[in-house]
Image (cartoon, rainbow, N blue to C red; front, side, top):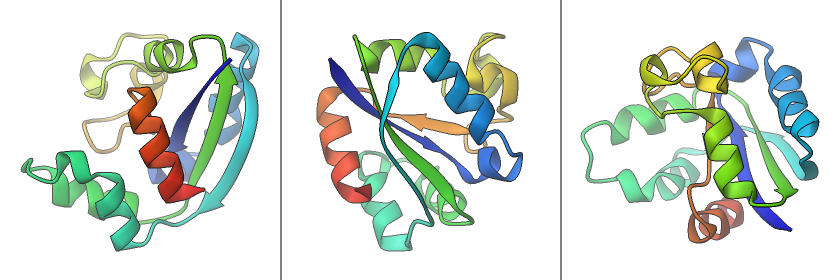
Length: 131
Protein backbone atom coordinates (compact mmCIF):
# COMPACT_ATOMS: atom_id res chain seq x y z
CA UNK A 1 0.00 0.00 0.00
CA UNK A 2 1.12 3.50 -0.82
CA UNK A 3 0.19 6.80 0.80
CA UNK A 4 -0.35 10.21 -0.73
CA UNK A 5 -1.49 13.61 0.44
CA UNK A 6 -4.40 15.62 -0.86
CA UNK A 7 -5.34 19.12 0.27
CA UNK A 8 -8.82 20.36 -0.51
CA UNK A 9 -8.11 24.05 -1.02
CA UNK A 10 -10.13 27.02 0.28
CA UNK A 11 -12.32 27.14 -2.84
CA UNK A 12 -13.23 23.46 -2.44
CA UNK A 13 -14.08 23.95 1.24
CA UNK A 14 -16.08 27.13 0.53
CA UNK A 15 -18.07 25.36 -2.21
CA UNK A 16 -18.85 22.58 0.28
CA UNK A 17 -17.19 19.94 -1.91
CA UNK A 18 -15.26 18.11 0.83
CA UNK A 19 -17.70 15.20 1.11
CA UNK A 20 -18.14 14.93 -2.65
CA UNK A 21 -14.39 14.87 -3.25
CA UNK A 22 -13.62 12.42 -0.45
CA UNK A 23 -16.39 10.09 -1.59
CA UNK A 24 -14.77 9.83 -5.03
CA UNK A 25 -11.58 8.54 -3.43
CA UNK A 26 -13.43 6.17 -1.10
CA UNK A 27 -15.51 4.79 -3.98
CA UNK A 28 -12.28 4.17 -5.87
CA UNK A 29 -11.08 2.06 -2.94
CA UNK A 30 -8.78 4.42 -1.07
CA UNK A 31 -8.71 4.49 2.72
CA UNK A 32 -8.52 7.72 4.67
CA UNK A 33 -5.48 7.30 6.92
CA UNK A 34 -5.42 10.80 8.48
CA UNK A 35 -7.45 13.97 8.10
CA UNK A 36 -7.00 17.50 9.40
CA UNK A 37 -8.95 20.73 9.00
CA UNK A 38 -6.75 23.80 9.47
CA UNK A 39 -5.63 27.11 8.03
CA UNK A 40 -2.09 27.42 6.67
CA UNK A 41 0.09 30.12 8.15
CA UNK A 42 2.08 32.16 5.64
CA UNK A 43 5.26 30.41 6.77
CA UNK A 44 3.73 26.93 6.34
CA UNK A 45 2.39 27.86 2.90
CA UNK A 46 5.74 29.19 1.73
CA UNK A 47 7.43 26.01 2.91
CA UNK A 48 4.69 23.86 1.33
CA UNK A 49 5.04 25.59 -2.06
CA UNK A 50 8.83 25.96 -1.86
CA UNK A 51 9.40 24.05 -5.14
CA UNK A 52 7.50 26.88 -6.90
CA UNK A 53 9.24 29.74 -5.09
CA UNK A 54 11.03 30.97 -8.22
CA UNK A 55 7.88 30.98 -10.36
CA UNK A 56 5.93 34.16 -10.93
CA UNK A 57 2.70 32.66 -9.55
CA UNK A 58 4.28 31.71 -6.18
CA UNK A 59 2.90 34.69 -4.23
CA UNK A 60 -0.62 34.12 -5.58
CA UNK A 61 -0.43 30.43 -4.57
CA UNK A 62 0.58 31.39 -1.03
CA UNK A 63 -2.01 34.15 -0.79
CA UNK A 64 -4.78 31.83 -1.94
CA UNK A 65 -3.92 28.82 0.24
CA UNK A 66 -3.77 30.96 3.42
CA UNK A 67 -7.06 32.73 2.64
CA UNK A 68 -9.27 30.20 4.47
CA UNK A 69 -9.42 26.71 5.93
CA UNK A 70 -8.33 23.62 4.02
CA UNK A 71 -8.84 19.90 4.54
CA UNK A 72 -5.68 17.79 4.37
CA UNK A 73 -6.02 14.05 3.96
CA UNK A 74 -3.55 11.20 3.74
CA UNK A 75 -5.02 8.55 1.46
CA UNK A 76 -3.81 4.97 1.34
CA UNK A 77 -4.15 2.49 -1.49
CA UNK A 78 -2.47 0.68 -4.33
CA UNK A 79 -0.44 3.06 -6.54
CA UNK A 80 -2.05 5.94 -4.64
CA UNK A 81 0.15 8.75 -5.99
CA UNK A 82 -0.39 7.88 -9.65
CA UNK A 83 -4.11 7.11 -9.40
CA UNK A 84 -4.94 10.17 -7.28
CA UNK A 85 -3.09 12.43 -9.74
CA UNK A 86 -5.14 10.91 -12.58
CA UNK A 87 -8.36 11.46 -10.64
CA UNK A 88 -7.67 15.13 -9.91
CA UNK A 89 -6.74 16.08 -13.48
CA UNK A 90 -4.52 18.77 -14.95
CA UNK A 91 -3.25 21.55 -12.70
CA UNK A 92 -4.82 24.08 -15.05
CA UNK A 93 -8.51 23.48 -14.44
CA UNK A 94 -9.49 24.77 -17.88
CA UNK A 95 -7.36 21.97 -19.37
CA UNK A 96 -8.54 19.24 -16.97
CA UNK A 97 -10.69 16.53 -18.50
CA UNK A 98 -14.38 16.32 -17.58
CA UNK A 99 -14.84 13.69 -14.90
CA UNK A 100 -11.68 14.70 -13.06
CA UNK A 101 -12.02 16.70 -9.85
CA UNK A 102 -10.43 19.80 -11.33
CA UNK A 103 -12.29 19.37 -14.59
CA UNK A 104 -15.60 19.21 -12.77
CA UNK A 105 -15.03 21.80 -10.02
CA UNK A 106 -11.96 23.96 -10.71
CA UNK A 107 -11.79 27.43 -12.24
CA UNK A 108 -8.13 28.19 -13.02
CA UNK A 109 -4.51 27.58 -11.96
CA UNK A 110 -4.92 28.82 -8.39
CA UNK A 111 -8.60 28.10 -7.71
CA UNK A 112 -8.30 24.47 -8.74
CA UNK A 113 -10.00 22.91 -5.69
CA UNK A 114 -7.35 20.34 -4.76
CA UNK A 115 -3.65 19.66 -4.37
CA UNK A 116 -2.14 16.18 -4.52
CA UNK A 117 1.45 15.10 -3.98
CA UNK A 118 3.16 14.28 -7.27
CA UNK A 119 5.80 11.87 -5.93
CA UNK A 120 6.80 9.89 -2.87
CA UNK A 121 9.37 12.58 -2.03
CA UNK A 122 6.73 15.33 -2.29
CA UNK A 123 4.37 13.31 -0.10
CA UNK A 124 7.02 12.92 2.59
CA UNK A 125 7.99 16.61 2.53
CA UNK A 126 4.44 17.99 2.34
CA UNK A 127 2.88 15.68 4.91
CA UNK A 128 5.55 16.63 7.46
CA UNK A 129 4.56 20.29 7.07
CA UNK A 130 0.89 19.53 7.75
CA UNK A 131 0.84 16.53 10.07
